[in-house]
Image (cartoon, rainbow, N blue to C red; front, side, top):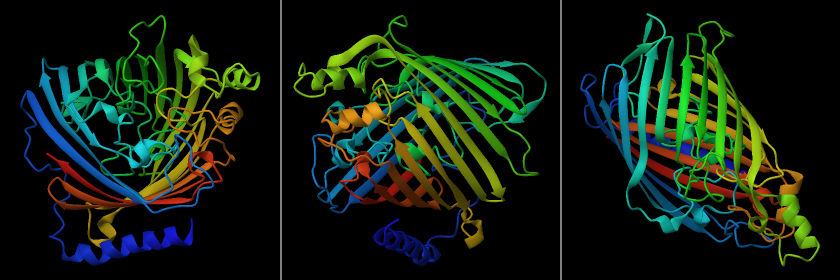
Length: 454
């Protein structure tokens, strides 16, 4: 990390050190929202608001292309608001419906970085902030044993206790990332990290439209020491598109994950997740786009001109979390996907390694606060980098040319709980080789977040 980035991080920590003692007394250690919610009502209504403001100062860039992160000073604010509703149709059957509104924008319209700095940003600003249907799911739980375990009521499940051994079935509109590649330390962009490739495995090109949703069916088996889940989902018609292809014969995504909870460290939880996915879609070939350009058939490398229905992208992911001591947790992710066919749904990453951790604020008498840090290294395949080097554009990247280097990201945050359901976070990100380009950057992105649980 550069000296400037270290200075900014130290400054952020100093600000919180000075400000926290004068805040209201640390609220009780619970997950209470601003408004009370019943644990017994058949009807569930809740909500959240997430506001993120980010800036970056000017940074060195030898050139700038159509899809580059702009090198001049920028600032941007995003907002994400969700109304969660649910209805218990029976003892083990639920209908879950969420309405969402995503507004504002991201830095450089969310272009120029594989690990973009704000997960809340919708990458197509022309969609506007008009409310839309986020989730519409039927959720069925089938008990396979008599033992029950406590469960926190939330927007994905209304039960306050569930069978320890059970089968859960879901069908409808949902986010695949709500169920696959979860991590207790690095998944929640509302209270934890903000970067796309920290909160999710960048090499997991999970099926989704531009807003991050799809129609799918997901089946999960849970027992005491392990779980497994399988999902079949619709793919977008075009890369990063808003319209889904409703023909499973033409396009679809299969996802499977095994979750293990071994007792590796006494009295400290361990979770390991092994993921695999296969996407079938109307994808372009980097090699075909390169060959057509070099042969003079295309005026520039154009992945969209070389799409073919039925192409396959597959990949694998590893995800682990470990409680070190009380209040201190570590996590790690690694992912890979084949890099011959175009990145299609999530981001332009063919390989990722990430690790980090978080610390609860009990040590400094702020039990509901949290400090987290993470490091990420993203990479792309030889075909992918050659395509960008020759001037091709992906749906996120395209500097006009490329001097390749792995994209390296540091992120640190501090989240303070101010009162019931009100959280404020300071965040700092440092990106080396933005968009895999050693001729641009590094760039420093400080940010602030306000989150409300309603």
